[in-house]
Length: 329
Length: 124
Image 1 (cartoon, rainbow over the protein chains, first blue to last red):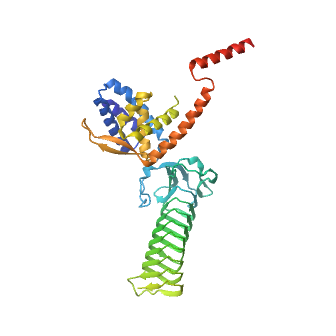
Image 2 (image 1 turned 60 degrees about the vertical axis):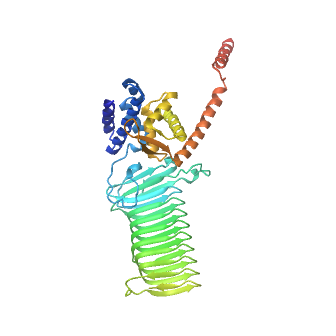
Image 3 (image 1 turned 180 degrees about the vertical axis):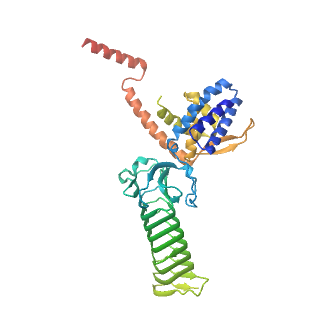
């Protein structure tokens, strides 16, 4: 049966299956052929049972039809954003760019969404476990990338959890003039992107943003949490109900405005001009947080800032609160 | 049989086998090929795809006879998928039999009915 394995390897190589996959497939077959031998099957019987290597290679490819047009890409800047291998995603569409300025418009319900920059020249949209890809509009027209779940087709009775995941790769140097993202329960990961205008709206989905460069940014969630690591921006507006907001290493050349009902805000190594915190019971905790001015309006929510550099002055411009406090140490 | 159709049915069978117990690749192939005419090159790609899609996980078990064997195990997701698939299969196959049985259940019945119809057409 060594010939079978050799032929299978040859066929898989012809079909440009990755070395890793080939190795796995060959290992599995060695094991299965051995098991067949152990049960007393002779060469002929085994041959009949395993069929032709060409047919198997073809079936392997056909049975994973989406992976056949997968291009092998090298991601240098995926970072923590895409935790899993890009190889586990299937390429849906590739769009070629005419201009360096694009807008991105994403409207999903329960699917997770990843956007990251990479060392390539086209926009690539991948999916994983998305059940009915035909229910989505995925297009690139007038420099606008649109990924949208068609509303009319959402099932009311979802028998099983059928949410999948999208991954969008955009060229590293691209400028996103407008980034609009809406979801109900899907989580989002966005990494290494420059965008002038950012609007993110989520009901319960969490959001993770890393290495982001944005001018005007608006975040709004009900119960979803927001985590930002590495941000350069001009204006940040955050609206939370019960979701929490966490930001590390950010430089904002303008104001940060927070509206929260009970969601907490945590800032670490953040610089900005004014910081305005309006809340019912949420707290704002800042470590190495250097706003030039700060104001608080709350029922019971506090602002607590602990900084090492005491020479940088923080002015309290207004404080309206029932039982909340502002502590700057 | 249409390849796509066959694949769908075999997928259901593979799921059903693994819902019963964890098994290694060859055992699954053996169990299924006992009852339906299908060979390794249909089953293995399905095992592989369903594993990649998170319906199965795998683990190795030492074997007395040579190399360790890769066992396949249904995940929670795979189980839900099986129930869903089985449901649509039952509906589909139920519908098919609804149609087929209109013309009779047994071959004799079907033949008799057909013969009568031909005769009737001739006499008219």
